Image: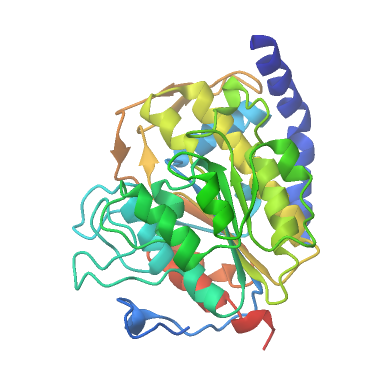
Length: 384
């Protein structure tokens, strides 16, 4: 195991300058239903983005980004998304103005409405009605939709985009919503709380490992469910065995969704950054953040030939209160301090590239992520 880790670390270090250079070259180059709880707040689309890609680094704050850049390239500011031309910060508190968790934070970004902790896609506090998400709204406009995560697929962040339940722990209802209601075209993640038999019955092609995923006929597939393992996907540090990396899942997701005649919406989560930070595990947090950055680089390179695309990169909240104390150079974990094993109230960065990304600036509410995506998206994927 140690030998594999060292090889992967050296490989990352060797590619660092190339990836940063590619990123800089790239930079150069609705309406709701009557039963929806957020109908009045839906912005009218104003932009020309056929494709909307949202990356969420769960638990990823300033410290995690800085530490990953130092380890990867020996300096901060060197991750792929840090070269984006538009950037700002978002506040992360929940509906009560208190410390958030992933369900409430992801719901705010997915629907434009803040809710109580543990709630997914429902107006609580409020009338308890469903809050339509950007995935559902753009899907109804004719776009294909997808969710990719390194947590199990029914975990809070992806669930906020495609389900409406009062408790994030109601995994059965979340799975049922995926298969019967919102029906994303593509779901990739860990396999806990989802049954292959149910997925196949719902009409999805099922893949369970990297080999099966890369063999997919991406031109023909319209509904694919990647069930990778029995729980959360492994940390990068520990090796993924036969399971795909986030970069690989992102690449295949783009190959499938790019065939959509009206464009697509895709959410990609680096979900295990948060888990490493809860444990104050610096090496695992750093390697998860690097893999997340590399997944963004994949999307950024893809967008070079698909300019009608908006890419946003942010976090739902920060975890652990990580601060970098000393840069120890490329390939060496920086010295860091941790203030807690829980979430913090720190504002988290947001980065924007592409159509509508100029709306990213200053300090914003997390609900603005939803509004930026909806305002930037073009109905039915055609420019106006």
